[in-house]
Amino acid sequence: MQQVTRTILSEGVGLTCVTTAKFKRAVLRAVLLLPLGGEDAALRAVLPQVLRRGTRTLPDLRAIGAALDEKYGARIESAVRKEGETLAVGFLSDCIDEACAPGADGLTASVIELLAALLYDPCLTDGAFRADYTAAEQQNLLDRIAAQKNDPRAYAPKRLTELMCADEVYGLSALGTAEQAEQITPQALYAAYRRALDEARIELFYCGTMQPEAVASLFAAALPARLAQAETYTPHTVVRARPAEAAREIVEEEPVGQGKLSLGFRTGGASLTGGDPVAYWLFQTVYGGSTSAKLFLNVREKKSLCYYASAQFMAHKGLLLVNSGIENKDFAVARDEILHQLALCRQGDITGEELAAARAALMTGWRAMLDDPLALERYWLAQAVAGTQISPEARIEQVRQVTQEAVVQAARDTTLDTVYFMKGAGK
Image 1 (cartoon, one colour):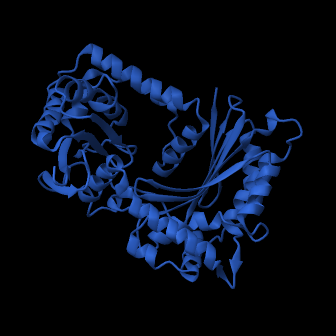
Image 2: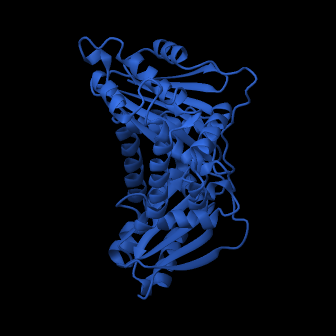
């Protein structure tokens, strides 16, 4: 049984502890929560990679690697995540749970101290980040931005989101723009780092055997005190229940061998912070969330209109995205069939077998999360950003209670916003 404890260490610093003896490794996280986008977007995207290069006392990757080896092979990775309209940047770590290794007393404390040093005691030269570290990570960021188009299956829904939310913060990338990345300098990065420390809300996480009071004490001792007058960012995401205008259809040609068709819908307000998200998850699963879903069985299997077809509920933002890979010639018929399957759900054409299969798939997904400490870390970060505290176990029980009428209503609340077709050039 997992015990989840939420503690506010100080103004703007929150800690979520999952206390369990289920795993042999402990997972820790320390991230800064900041507004998505803005002039510092690329600077903030590159920041954890530069910070990860060295601290004042461990000034390079070799020194950090040696320190991690001494901590029973602990790992610390940089993290840049988009959580709704919030950016999370910082570090994720895992190490042997000290209760599982003789002689490992103090291991958790030492990992927390290193996380704090990476965030607050960086390697500097003349009051700024090292030029070689900054230049290397600037180029890595430029490469990552450019490489997004190299995976059309992932890029199509990203592009759909940009178009669909062009006048909303959610349409912005967690990486910033290439133009912003080109302007990165050690001095500009350090100035952005200081602004981030002043503005950010700090989110901490621990999953392991240690009691939450002990974990809270370790983090409180390692992190520097925040200024009482500092005004920290409050995460929030604007959920638009309905499209602002009539549905649009956008076709762009790209040098891809297989067309990518993505449809974006508004959920009527269903999200982590509004409506009935559990009923919506169940509708999404019936519609396109498993191999027993309508999109998979009908659009892909029976009609052979696509190579893949699935639906994803973006619960932070209240969006439903349908993604598929098709032949260019099948664009209109595949689009119409995807919409037809939605119409069937709206009409209540959902069998008991379909609903039972979707319910089982959804509950299995949340049960699997309970067996993966890294999945739990991601789940509880989303909860912290949304300001909610609903466990996977509670979600499972909620799924059991959802009626078919609620699932049909979720389908009826779904409104098409944008159709995006990435057409294979010259095909």
